[in-house]
Image 1 (cartoon, rainbow, N blue to C red):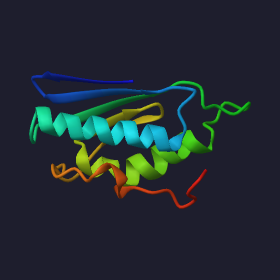
Image 2: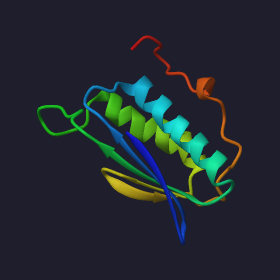
Image 3: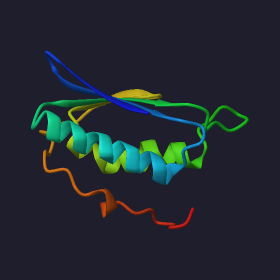
Image 4: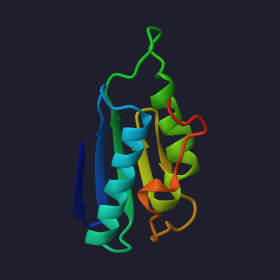
Length: 115
């Protein structure tokens, strides 16, 4: 689900959210990947490439978990620990320097636990 590779412009984090992963599993996987990248390549610019398989409604929009993962978790939280992110709908650059002290896996909780 996740892969880390280094090249001339930093560390690239490739992550695929599968149809079987819910929001919580995707959050855990993404945080784990960012933590591993920081351990293996300390303070290097991190570029996330996110793919989401399935998680679509009949009208083609993302389902609740995929939408929340991109809009809330990624944009409002994880982006601080990245330099750039490419997600299914766009590419986003962090206007500030990325933070390199990545929080522990249990730092993020949903507003609706158990969903």
